[in-house]
Image (cartoon, rainbow over all chains, first blue to last red; front, side, top):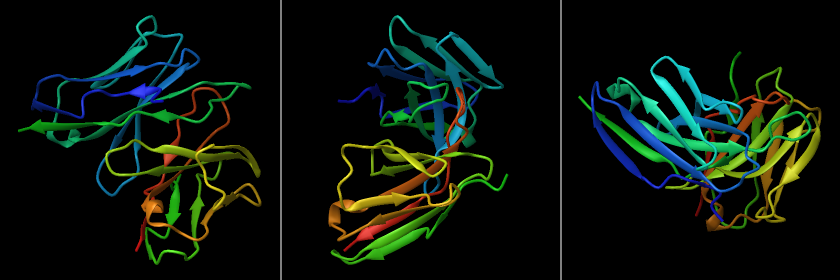
Length: 115
Length: 114
């Protein structure tokens, strides 16, 4: 079963506008959520994360929102830049023993930012 | 911080051959993970270590796959009797064993089984 879902395989936005990428999860034990960015022929690069005790985390142009009741998170990129064009993966983890466990990934959303 | 290093970057092998991949994690990280990624999918968890102890293996992981981390530093992933379905990108990641520690990935080893 797919515990982390990204229902939009692709998204196209204009440079300077907002990009919103969405992710849903089913496992209520998840307490740590991350977004990764991936360019072709490279490994995923960590972008931003959020703990389940928060509902928002911001880092520069990137903001992640968490809605625990809806089991939904989103990544906002403002303003979008052509260099942001990549595949974005949502990931989630359930911690135990005082440490983050393995990450479960979604299938990714390909973001294309048009100049 | 030199990042996570994986070797080789590409491997082409014939069906039935054995292959071994190496991963060198970020030096202060005590957790090391192996993932597999196929086209159009997200990374799929295979196994992970804390220091030299293998803490979890995916139930999807065939007996042909084995991973080691003998001294708690680098790790190897071996696939025996490769099959065409093993063709994928094999990713290694490392992290600290604490809450809110993100995984940092290497650039992967691309395996092609002919």
